[in-house]
Length: 244
Ligand code: ADP
Image 1 (tube, protein in one colour):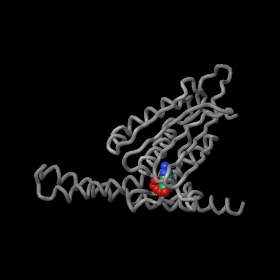
Image 2 (tube, protein in one colour):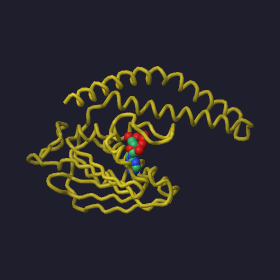
Image 3 (cartoon, helix red, strand yellow):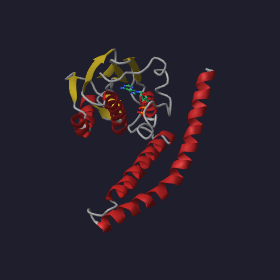
């Protein structure tokens, strides 16, 4: 229990600090990237500082992304629940990542259960969870590998399994991966917020997330959401998720 209290205190404190800093950084950062883009435009494609300007723009974008993640983490939004088919949402996210799969030469294996029941979820939050997990899998593989995504219903839950044959997670790291700011990625590549945010979203949906991993072999993440239970044909009421 003591550990839990410490954890939630830590999260609240991080949230407050992050929100404050993120807000203060956002405006000057926009000025920096806006000016760099303006110079780039004025000087045209063949200017001698093209590379340096591109560096400014891309690095500013990196900070902007980090800030966006920090703010999402610091100020969680209440879910906007609707009836959702996970297969459709997975297809949507995969489409967004199409070029990354091609670029990294990763084969995607989809084993979707066709008659999967619906869940009660916030679409954009679910997208974020799927995106975080799949991007991690792509980064764990780096080049040439396989990602398998399987969906099935079991014991009142819709299950989504993400399997990759990437680097895997060391036993001494596996208990830390859901902690905010835990990352093993090189500076600038990881914020350590992806799984912390994902776990919070999943908890809020009364779902579960589990991980199994073998270093050198690969990793399996299993995400479970309670199956949507029809309430006398009532349409989405925007209320709490209907659990099991
Ligand atoms: P980030 O991706 O920014 O590091 P995450 O919270 O998404 O933050 O992930 C935390 C850590 O968990 C990663 O740095 C990595 O060490 C580990 N991890 C997550 N997913 C995988 C995976 N599929 N394969 C190997 N390691 C993973």
